[in-house]
Image (cartoon, rainbow, N blue to C red; front, side, top):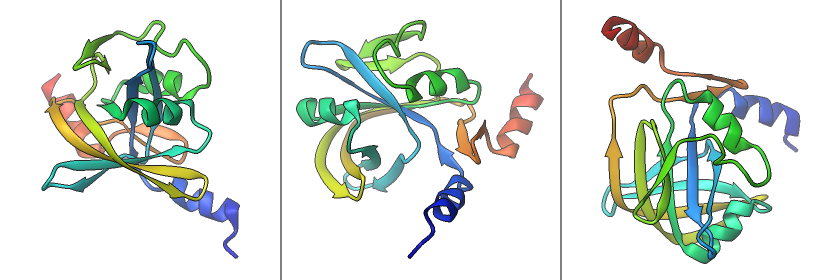
Length: 165
């Protein structure tokens, strides 16, 4: 048996991109949550993946809408990541956003994509969401990453930010 605490500690040491995955509910309300399991999956066709907890409210909405927006957060958006990591309604309160292709897009994100959910694959206590990308944009902003319960960015990005200031 793998020791759960040791496994959690190991995986917590792996730097992960910080994203906020969004969708719109059937009533037209924005919904989103912070996700650090975001990854590129395929170039042809362009696909990404991320995992959502089986009990996630976002998962319920994604199952219905089959459309997602992925906001790849930029260095400096730690408060946004923390706000969307919480439970309950009101995550969008105080966070600048607008609708883009019918999905909630957060202001200042380093990247954005719109996707169609192709598959939902069960995986333990999570569901792996496989998404075909239909639109994407990227900025020059340094990416926000998370490891060992700390937000940051790659050190070379930090130097590039300092040099351009």
